[in-house]
Image (tube, rainbow, N blue to C red):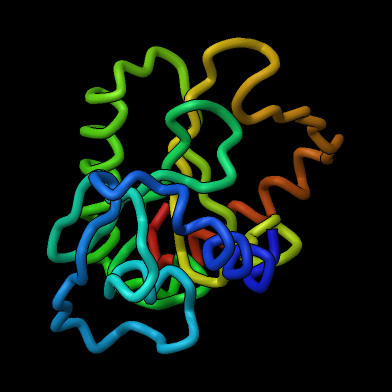
Length: 170
């Protein structure tokens, strides 16, 4: 869903969200938020959401276009389009929050998904993690994994490049 479509959906449908779900303004002292980002607006409370949990570094809320019942998003309170742009102190908070929500929702099988860039199907250019319940074969995330046939030498070359860039001795 494009940002404009998501924004239009929220603007048209905010009245259908039960009042007891809508959280008030969050008085954020974070200066790492964008004025034009829909998720930053949700964090600040400028756009209503069905907030689940919030910490100093993260914000979790229900997805308004879910793949299954209970689909929610966990986002760092730091505006960045790509995972590698988010400081570690924000990322370290995301997975424990996601785990708490999965436990509270009673999820047995689920996906945690994070996309980076348009080619990777990232719809909103703010790092976000989807927690998607997988209650059956038809609901939730469907992935059709098609591994590429690769020569072992090509895999080893990429492996060496990664190690070199990490400066990890063999």
